[in-house]
Length: 308
Ligand code: BMX
Ligand code: ZN
Image (tube, rainbow, N blue to C red; front, side):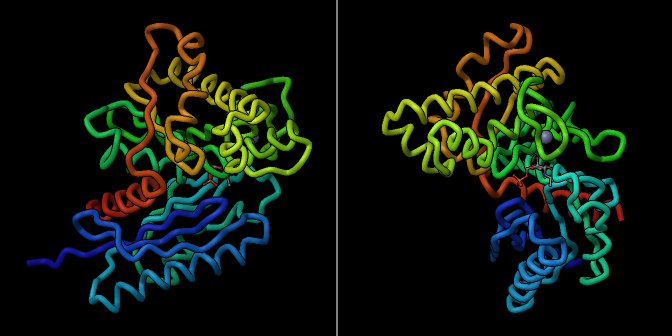
């Protein structure tokens, strides 16, 4: 009988890179995390990436586990072959990096790379709060705002593989310019960095999104005002997405979504008013949290391996 092998799942985000072994039964083991930034050059990012993958590979070797392939979820616009073809940071040296090929060469192993939001919705759809549905939108509200959409049971990829760059749809055409070049992007208001930006504007001092949530929970009206704005921006985007895709459910994950119902209530506030009755949709927290992207990345490589 052929031995069932584990895969390595990787999640490259704007704040952390995570890698883990994922067993044949889908269990996440030996998770390794390193802090990340996209602002200190692509070489440093790749060094960090390789260091977490190496650690996961070492853990596999020490436990006598064989690795069948690597599934990578990454921020950025990724084509169907695992190359980074774009970034919301317009002058980023990530653009043009063939991440898939770099990892294939280094590990002599099959590699699939996809956008982190795509991986996240796939993870929830197959293993989390999206189970049993056929049309699911998954949003990841973290450093940025990412997401993916499953339409009639299939992940929607678009012409170049980079569909659903949801953080960069505009929710205010009079808004500030985003680093992607667009104006009033959702990410400027509702991501962790967006909330911190609004917080700094309102408070007149630098503040993290976590601190802002803490103050809002204590009843601080300025912080509540900021979260109301962040929630309305996300609600506005969700209303538009519902009109476009008519999903059965919208799921939220990521560091900001981990604030739970306290955050969800700011998003739900006014959402129904902005959505035509036919398109009203339940909004829920994902079940897999920060691990949704890892589950999705594991699924991507397993699906690929089945086709080989
Ligand atoms: C940004 C964009 C998306 C990504 C999203 C969430 C880049 C480099 N990133 O909008 O592709 O899905 O952030 O990513 O273009 P995270 O950094 O919050 O994990
Ligand atoms: Zn943008």
